[in-house]
Length: 153
Image (tube, rainbow, N blue to C red; front, side, top):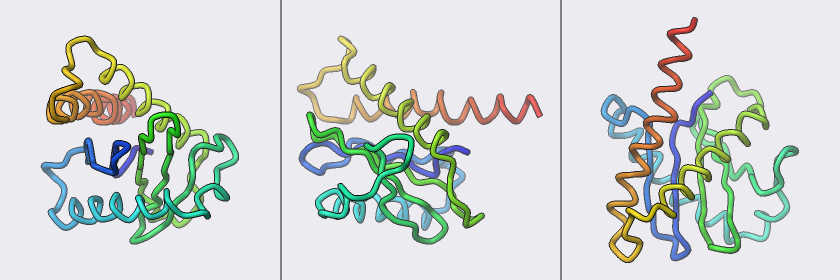
């Protein structure tokens, strides 16, 4: 199971990146839907209900909502105000595997920290360089791993 989209939102609620695997082959309406879901998610982070919901594996990861066959999860890193939002295909209607969800969140967090702390990234510059590097790393992680998994089948 791979993500349908990954959004990184900074402490000012501005998107650093809204990543959609294979975006070139995704319909425009899907891209707009994921952008809207990212925006809707910001309301959940500010809601008192956000603290009440959590998955069993990792209390930092919360199921925010399910809409249009997409389960949207969020993680707030309180120390920095960073928000990570990940949507998963939920067409089967069943509950997603908490271990897989936790694993993907940890991968996204690790990639973000590595890119952000790189001495080659100018953090005083706009987020464009950061977004480009994140997108490349996410492609490496989520697209190439899916291709290698399919090749093994």
